[in-house]
Amino acid sequence: MRKKDICSCTYKELQMEMQEIGEKPFRAKQIYEWLHVKLAGEFDEMTNLSKALRQKLEEQYEIRKVSMIDRQISKMDPTEKFLFELYDGNMVESVLMKYNYGNSVCISSQVGCRMGCRFCASTIGGKLRDLTPSEMLGQIYQIQKICGERISNIVVMGTGEPLDNYDNFLKFVHMISDEHGLHISQRNITASTCGIVPNMKRLAEEGLQITLALSLHGSSQQKRQELMPIAKKYELSEVLEACDYYFEKTGRRITFEYSLVQGVNDTQEDLKGLVDIMKNRNCHMNLIPVNPIKERNFRKPSRKNALEFKNKLEHNGINVTIRRERGSDIDGACGQLRRRHIESQEEN
Ligand code: SAH
Image (cartoon, rainbow, N blue to C red; front, side, top):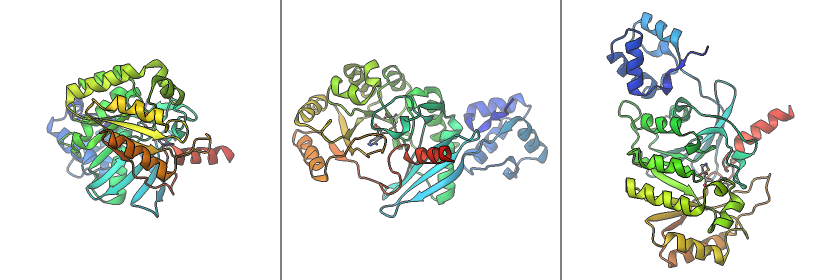
């Protein structure tokens, strides 16, 4: 049997664990700090614990490794992409983006994804497994260690669907924002969902302050389901209702993500549909010119057309930005770096 994954224990759980193994509760504070602030990789680094206690921990728990196996640094902008290997040989990727306001990390929430969005590289090959809280945290911890700078913002927009891994994702949010850990403000965390309605509603009721981003991608039910199979299960009207519920419960403005695909969802009819969806909502739209993947024949609109699309939305009173393209020279699109590694393994 595997030892317990100690970095997936919340502060409270760690206190209970210590009690169970006959240790004083204050040990939890020390150990949690070693794991989640000093980012220790081994129990032996925990020098303010006795050797006997370190040994005891070693026997019962493991600090699961999230190890960097590739790193790509963009030549175009301050963006880096990381590929990490997990304890069972699976791989996940994460992106570091440096902005004036701080360092932002985009993490993966699953190994692969089963949502099947047509333009997305992460979904090719399906979902292999969920990530544990420690593996979501580990991506951030490793990047912070490697670059030696504090991470201030998190986006859960890498491979996977966070609301398809609900319990682990929720625990992750609590742990990364815990005052005993890295203590990243929930207001600086954004999670993106393809629209899993029941879990969007559940999330609304958790009393969190994170931003919810909805992958919209279609201006009508018909268009949306052409690009996103999950839209057949949860209709656009229900998804929008769940967004409204999230706003009502949390006061956090929803972000709509819209990947612009040339000739598919960038027409006049789409503009009109989007204005109808957005005009009476307290929301913001992020346009993402689609990042073409070699498995599919989707193209991004020209810069001029994307700008025109944005301007027209703005003229209709919609709050919209075009997402600045980052790291397009380094396998920028979700899941591309991992795909490339899997393919090269398959060839060998
Ligand atoms: N499962 C979540 C989060 C992962 S993807 C979700 O669906 O929201 C993060 C965002 O990137 C989503 O809006 C997704 O649709 C978009 N995306 C994925 N691949 C893309 C690509 N090749 N080009 C543009 N956007 C893409």
